[in-house]
Structure formats: structure tokens, C-alpha cells
Amino acid sequence: MMFLLKRLFYILWRIWFYVLVAVPIVLLFPVLLILSSREKFYPQFFWLARNVWANVILYGMGFVPKIKMEEPIEKGKSYMLIANHTSMADIMLMLKVSRNPFVFVGKKELAKMPVFGFFYKRVCIMVDRSSVKSRTAVYERAQARLDQGLSICIFPEGGVPEEDVFLDEFKDGAFRLAIEYQIPVVPISFVDNKKRFPFSFFSGSPGRMRVQTYSFISTEGYTLKDKAKLKADSRKIIEDSLRLFQNVKKVTSN
Image (cartoon, rainbow, N blue to C red):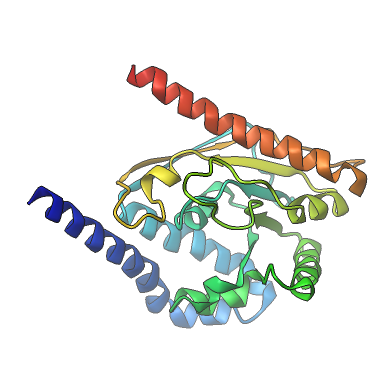
């Protein structure tokens, strides 16, 4: 009986997630449509996404963001935000990290999602990783957004890895852009997202979602020859952070 009740909870909880994703978009549809019609309106679109949409979903699901930052993000400055990718909640949690408007670079498949996908393809930079032409277009669109003073967010694993993969290898795109535009890389670790809301359907739980943002990695003076080092350094910071939190939990539980 308990097994069936638990299964029913997860089914309803997952459905509730999609309800929370869709309802604010539907209610704010006319406003979002206007704000997504021009790139100059994007900061206002971002404000609504961050302060209304993300909050409704995170707190509505019982998730409590706990964000710690080693270094403040300066207003009006562009950054390259990177983090590990394990959950559908990563997008909402990333919106809570930075008050500065940034644009997501993400896979084109998300544009197929009902309601959410309509605005995703209007304001995000979509990439078809199987297409060289698409990957090239990503750089052009990202450069245009950086020229406007915005930041860029890329999950450098290139997608959500298999659940048994601790942290996948990073792709080059985020680091190439950071070097070409001489903008700092912001390493971010999402500590609890895989536990709280994994892609495994019958798992997860409400609770805190810890985020640790580490000291920014300056790319000043870097050239594309330094891309591999920048990528390796960034990945090591995130991997070490995740392992540290994992070990702290084991010590605490003992």
C-alpha cells in the first residue's frame, strides 16, 4: 500500500511541476509576448522570469534555494555562467543566481515543450549539436547578446549526462566565447538538484537546493591557446565542489 501511495505522490508531484511551469506563462502571456518581441525588452523579460516564474516553480515544488557566492556579480558587467546539469530545475535555479540579465544557450529540443517552448525559442539561443551550421550560428547570436551587455549561461556538459555519471566532460563553446570576449567565467555547482528533482520519474523530494558560486576565473590576456586550460580549471572547481559537499554529507551522516 505504501509503495502505491509513494508512486501516486511522484506522479502527482511531476504533473504539478508542469502545471507550475505553464500557469505563470499562460497568465502573463500578453506581457511576455510583448517583452519577447524585441531584444531591447529582454531585461524586463528576464526580471519576470527570475522573480515570478522561477519563484513560483521552485517554491511551489517545495524547493528552497540556498545560494552562497564567493564573489558578487557586478551590475552591468558580462559573465560566462557555467554549472553542472542534472535536473529540469537547473534553469529556474540558475535564474536565481544572477540579478544581471543573461541568455541561456540550450538544446533545440526544449522548444518542443508546450507553452514553455514558445518563449524558449524566442529568447534563448538554441543549438543543434549535430549540426556544424547550428553551432556556428550559436557563436554569432551569443556575440550579439554580449555586445548588448548581457551575460551568457551555458551548461558545458552539453546536456544532462546519464544519472550514474558524476560530472561529464565539458564542451569547448563556453570557454571559447569567454576568451574571445575576455569575460570572466563563473563556476557554479548545483549541489542538490540531482537528489531533489532528477530525471528519474519516481524519485526526488522537496527540500533545500544549495548553490555554490566560486571566485570568477579571469580570462584577461587569455588566447584560444588557453582554452583547454580554462576548461580544465573550470571543471576541476565544480567537480571538487561537488565531491566536497558529498563527503561533508557522508561525514555528517556518520
